[in-house]
Length: 190
Image 1 (spheres, rainbow, N blue to C red):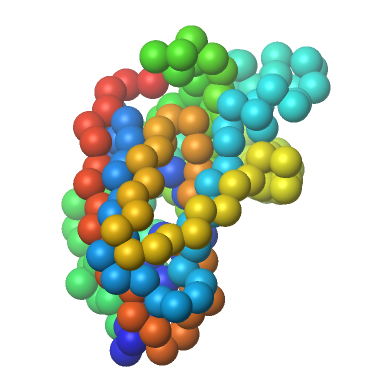
Image 2: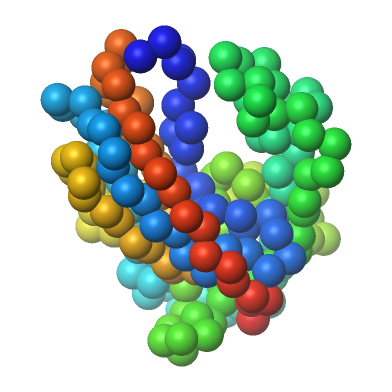
């Protein structure tokens, strides 16, 4: 209850800043508050499918820069909170990935950018990057692409980081929530 920082409180994909991003994640609810603490998931297959053919063609040619320094680095967001143990790192990975990937298992196309760790489009200025990325971020969280998972003690969620975003809701102030997470190794994206 004394922790104020909401870990995972913004839309993100786990470890997109790694050269071989996490394939998936498993989250187990050990203790949950009486209300709140849900996790939202956004479907990047559906978000991609709903884009115009013209935008899909443009995105197929683009790569994005993913970084973790602003979240986990020495002067990061976490380094200045009650969870400073999560920040202050000197080794902060970054990677370049296609903005649209072909999922290695399903063969389906998915949007592969996220608001937490995608910092720009390769070869574009920051202003240009943020204009397109901002549009994609707003598009990807339309209600038709989002599912709300309500936690109960003992419930478990397993998700594919290559095809989803997620966000932990911070709507249980002063209440206790304990989760255990496993991150599953992945591989390079195409």
